[in-house]
Image 1: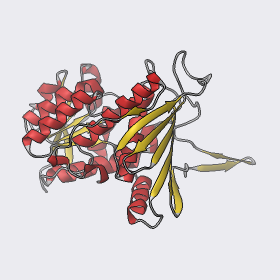
Image 2: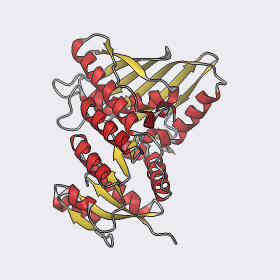
Image 3: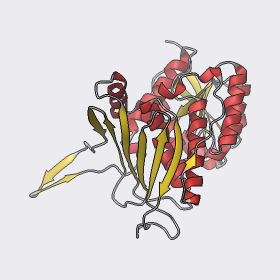
Image 4: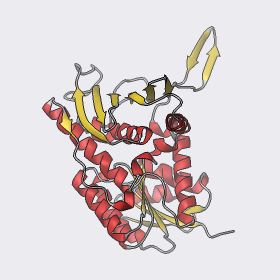
Length: 342
């Protein structure tokens, strides 16, 4: 049997702990070699029961730990730039959770650093590209049987927002998934953003502008609207409908467990993204491990991460100004030619 890929997981919070479980119990061909988190007790708890794992408070120490051949970054977004650049300096392949880097200037520095290497090392964690329904929709749109896509109607709802969640985070944290999904499904860059704000829901924390309606324009003349509602109160829902010249297609219709008992029927609604997109995360990490063991890098690139951050920044400016805001992207390095449609 070939040697297992030794992975350092940086960040042992909700997402990082789930990836540690996934690498240990679900994904084949890899093992957790090191875990790092500033909260050392949390890192130890996430690594409990795993053989041959070193635990660190310093993420850079984890990169240099014995047996580490690749890195999975699941720490908070502001820490990502330093960690990505450190992985590049060591020649380590990386799977980095979104946002790659929250601010576009930092994200561009990551793009430029990787382009200077002349080879890709980073895959960015836009897991919807690995969801079975999204992949079927992508195949359908690419096949052309429905004609040119005219509009995407998207819905993104969460049960509740965590403490400290801001109005801007509805766009740069939550809608960032729709930003990448729209770019990928349509094969087009997003060029302008407008944000409309209805009266906030009574369920939203004081001062939070929730929900919002975000409207994107694309380079190919399509429109993308996103209803983002992070305190809907009842479940986690993600839906997308593509309206094309000769038909439409819709995904995310909650085909979940239906329980019938005592004269009533009840359908379960997922309560968070780790439930709704569990299979997508599994496929994403497995694809990354398989490619890394073969010396390849696939999936969403650093350019995709940068583009998402740049569009999200424009969206936040649109939210604050109340007007249409143009998206401005730096020139794309040759290393990432064609990445928007992969």
